[in-house]
Length: 418
Image (cartoon, rainbow, N blue to C red; front, side, top):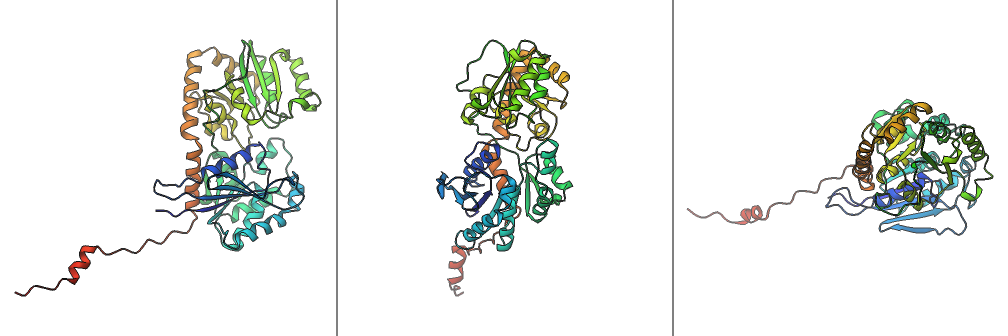
């Protein structure tokens, strides 16, 4: 029986937030407490993060066997990557103090490149096996139009080469890691998971009208494929587009990106069929997705491709750009459609044809929900993560064999005289 593991997860980003990396780390922490085998003992999981607010407690219980520990490193507020780098040494010092004594973990798993920068050095110094997840590497984020720290490529490469195992979220990211110098044998593909209790077909839904609804959920409206979706909507009459993401609803009118997208919708004469919902609380996303006939994931570069999984779990087929994690998660012509990125005419026609095929759409819906439940459950993702850890953990010495009682008694019995 495998002994209980003491697992340390490390993330320098805000774990109280609702961005996808924070959600993934919290879900993973809760799920990793389950043992890999039925006869195994529960694991102990501690998530180490940087204190983001002055009133944040030093230790927060996440679940039985899982806790969040907030360490002091720099000002107690959200920081940019540039600011975080100035306090990496303080964060590493806090980890070292925790891990040098009785709190030493069996394995350290860092999330994000800045978390990896702090954790890798300490794990190496203390001789602790080290795993790294990037949640999107610099080259992919740069292609998506996001600003990237000038030293990030070099630091990501150094962390990856020094890690015992690097977990990639999908096959394309695994290839990117190998190309940037991570040894291929050190890379393990472990996908993101979806909470099947929160994201499910049955449950409350937001009100909607008579039009077929297309739903697009993204963090950043500027890089989330909204432009392409608006242009595709021109070719899908009698359908509406609901966009969730960007600033809060109260800040929509003042946001320059939203203003530009509204002007584009007016130019395309689809503004009466577009709804900008702003950034929704996570608990509202399933209610929105359940109103959708189709979910759109049109950006080819998603660092944390969780949106297709959440839509599929709600029984919503996905029309996805054929790139990144989309190609792993969405099965073409089974749980949705693969479409070429940045080709709104082709995308619009594909959506129109699919909406006209009720039987096909219903079949995709059933297959999508089934795939999300079976392949991307939190339990399965946690088990695959534990197997990746097993690759680099020291092997346990087998217990010495115990002599059978019968053999011992036989040795003590004197021979009978003839």
